[in-house]
Figure (tube, one colour):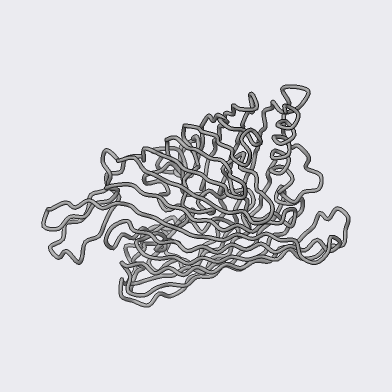
Length: 459
């Protein structure tokens, strides 16, 4: 039995290693603590550098200069992760780093100006994840059923596959962001503190968590017309949140050693999954009508499907990757949140004309009460080499958002390609994206564009 359990553990671990599409990566940065290799410490290091050209929203300036278009470069992610399998049942994980550092922002907390601690310099490193977990029922001990429980600052946030996506192997250049609906409000960079349970029953995989969200205290604007209420994040002493995600894995079984869901296996597995999830927090937002405060629950639901399938024969090594998701969000009446990744724009006080209601730079209506449809697909082009290193994977994505705070829905597109040098471990990604720009809540959205070139190294 011990040899069987050791084999299962190593098989799961190996699945997580070789899913990145590199023929030579092997065990990576792994330090074995015993001869069998089932007690170990593994280190993962990565960086993602973005070179961007952004068509700015109307009314934008960058570094005190009005501009319609801007080139910039930034550190999208600089991260380090380590986890230790101390025994076959006990694991501890820590994950820290920085995000979104540009030439003008993302610097140390409280920094101003351009001196030694300027706006974009010396960003504060912080923990993204820090948790311990214990395997109550190991695979094989109770038939088809397995169970692990854990606690800490964690990423088991339910809702959807993309909500718990790995940032190392996206199909597109990055997350669509709305799949992290609480990002840096009542969570810490898509994580909350709490307890989780995960495991499998045959082809089913499950994840559930109970968490204490981070407190938020935005003040709702008082209105006299109840129909004009706008909910804002304000949970004071927050109620516990509940989250969960369950999926059925029709073909190959995916590893659940870590929470991070793979975005593209590059043909190394045959995967087709259907999943559904939720997130709920009582009294997460508030509105004010004639000075009367009303509290509203945050209730989020999603269903999704994921496929990653080799195509043709083993010689050409083609593969299809696809994801589709439907998201239903309720944060309270007319809730709307505008976000932009590494936004370098600021408001131009001298601009004459209609400004974007989202704000300057690349801000857009990202998250809100309403429905979102999302689809992405990519094709790994054929290669006849025995150990192909240079691979190309063109992709496209489509998003439709129908938020109750806006009269007109929006559609946006992403098109691009991954240029694999050594699987996901060394790759370039090129992507052109559109985003909606509204000048009023009742206007038809116009499109602005952004080109991104990402350099990724991951060990």
